[in-house]
Image (tube, rainbow, N blue to C red; front, side, top):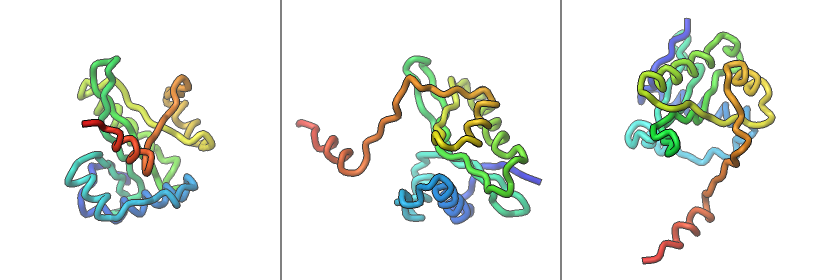
Length: 160
């Protein structure tokens, strides 16, 4: 039996371990830069994002991290799915689809305009899964990012 529910503070160690599993699967373990305290504070104190977890026999076997966005073109908010992860031995049981269905219902119930996320270009199993749900690739956009030194450099550009 699988149960999806909002994460609690007591879940943080399990969630962090799953985040690290996802990073390994995505060949990005070297990009994990957070401390457990920073992660917990960002989620449960500052509430920058929300987490759903999937429990099976008292063990957390998957999670979804999401946060709210805003579309100026739609004039309303949406949900951005940052991570969706289910441990490999539990895949194929509809858990990923349930996570997405819960978020889709949240969008509908709250009058939000969309649910969006990214997927690595090489991750064919996930892409196939998302396309079967009706998701579309938005290839007219580039996903841009500033971090580290570039972020600091731009912040220092402010003129008084």
